[in-house]
Image 1 (cartoon, rainbow, N blue to C red):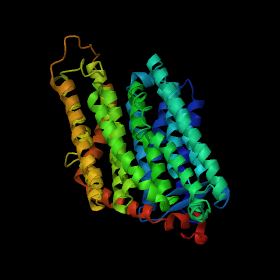
Image 2: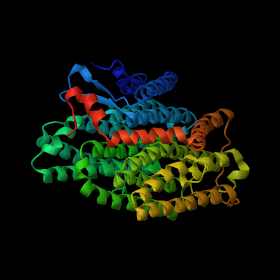
Image 3: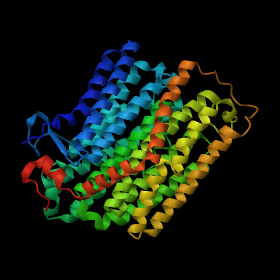
Image 4: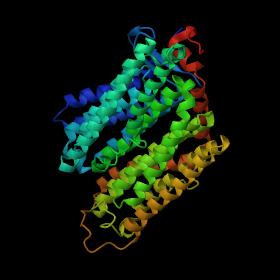
Length: 506
């Protein structure tokens, strides 16, 4: 008997898709576009909350598009992790939409900004809910096209060069992904993830299965910007306007991480014998390379871009260790990091508006000029470094605890060392931009109007309050992450929800 709430799974796909279509149709009517963006963001947030409430008890919702039964049709699936990722996507949509109203770069290209933002959210939310591998590829393509358009907003040569690098390297990863999809279909005769989970163990040529799994790992690892496939990210993110950089930092790499978690807990868990050691190497290299790159740079956006890479390493630790506790640590870390990293890029945009530059050499005295900005920076910066009682402390604690519990002492030690170096980078920004005297050649920045301050600081304050709430009341999210980790480690509910009573794990 179908679940009467399975229609909830389709809403997070339908809302931003319609917003993108109507946003494009309203070209030349900026006020209508703004109202549409705000309305669709609020609607998506409500739909995401309903979806999360429906699956919070462990229910897995599966919706078959066009009433085609799985594994023959398009399936959308929501479990705890997918629903949480959709909710965090809705929060990012709302935050960046409001912030962009005060960002001159976004408003200069307003006719394009609104439909492209909605299209990006459409691709991201659909990827989190995808129940088959080919449609996951389709949603990656939607994200790539819309993100390329968003990256060139502002029209500078630096942005065009960065967009070209970003697009070409992501196209390579997407091509590898598509090749792997074709090979896996040839081996199993299906693209539905739940059905594939049942068929993969019975494939006679397990060597070919391992080869395909490696190709998929490489494609998703490139999308997640992990070591050694990270170089496209610091070459592009620092060129984007602030709201674009914020939503990129929050969501794009996390879709790659989500795909890795989904695939290597659902479809290829039997391959953990070779996946684990490779993931140890990837996680350790990602943490170290990212944090060292951040320590070496003196431009705020470049520092934050490299820290995206280092923090992705913490999320990969869950797959490297592959225990329910470790996967729960990855879930907690993803949700915490999306909020914190987006907030830091929004604050970087405000720093540039108030201080006139992103370069630490040309910034100074921001604490005296705007103490509120200093306080708003301190919350996500210290959370990123993992200081208690902020959200980053509990996220790192779960990851490190899972490492010690599984006797991966060295991996836990690298995670702790990365946290210390992260603190160094955040202190560097604080001392150079906020505390030191402004240099003689400091650029003059136009003062913010009251409306601009409200629009810039409103989303920043909201995200900062979420960070504080997670830190001070961590138990509900920790319990949710542990339940999500357990659900990902046991595949029965997911397979049964998609395939019905006939789907049983071997």
